[in-house]
Amino acid sequence: MRDEDSGNRLGSYLRARRDLVSPEQAGIPPGGHRRVPGLRREEVALLAGISPDYYLRLERGRDKNPSPQVLESLARVLRLDDVERTYLLGLAAARPKAPRRKRAERVPARVHQLLAHLPIPAFVEGRAFDVLASNAMAVALSPRLRPGQNRLRSFFLDPEEQAFHQDWTKAAAGFVAALRTTIGDDTDDPRFVELVGELALSSQRFRTLWARHDVRALEGGTTTVHHPVVGELRLHRDKLPIDDVILVVYYPDKDSDSDEKLRLLAALSQAEPSDAAGAWTADAPPPKKR
Image (tube, rainbow, N blue to C red; front, side, top):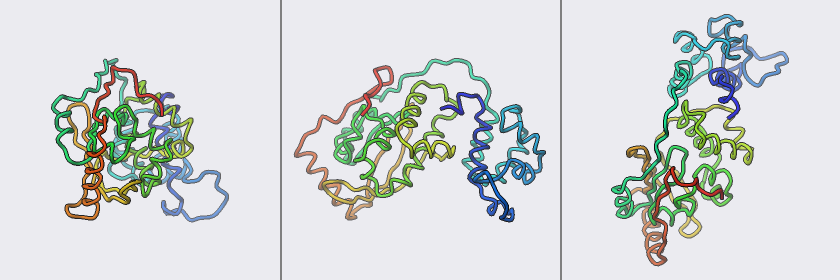
């Protein structure tokens, strides 16, 4: 995480976001030779009503205390949505943190019991998207949901996982944006440093998306996947915080074609018992790289 390690997260974010705004979007007439893909620094400054010199100091980390009014103007020029605007304000408000001891991510016993009783795919993930526990239906849906796997690593480095998602490209962008939101100001967390470093070295797509500095709210949604046995499944996904971990559940519309296919998958998984259910905690060795 080179930009974060430099201590200039605000400047890195401003630079990345102005590269994504075209002159046309900003109301600037096209024409002339441009050496940058998006807006020039002086254009952002002019549109935001601040001096070019002051904006340059912000990008280079020489001024880390802009007023909320300046940040609101920059958010408008950079066309940030509510989540991105909140993220920008948070970057400016960030202060040096006192060292704190990280708590191990543990799955409560009651959640293990819940997983065992749920008839739909369900698993527990940690902040770095490590699979900490899962039920048999989750593993029947995807073997990459076994405890000890990392969802991000599988998503970007496993061809089977990429083929599993109908719109992998869109899902990849959302996943990386969610990672930035999850990391927040914990940029020195060894788990995140290791994970981002590995993916940046191994995946060009990850590097491209990470450089955009997108952020996205952590929420559920609806996805379509291609299961190798039962075919296409349209599933809703909900994420439910429990203590320090997240319970993720997948479920179809009742009496839909996907509902019928999921019931078939359940029958097949019961016919072939799995040792899927289990847990990995952060105080144990990290998951093996796949």
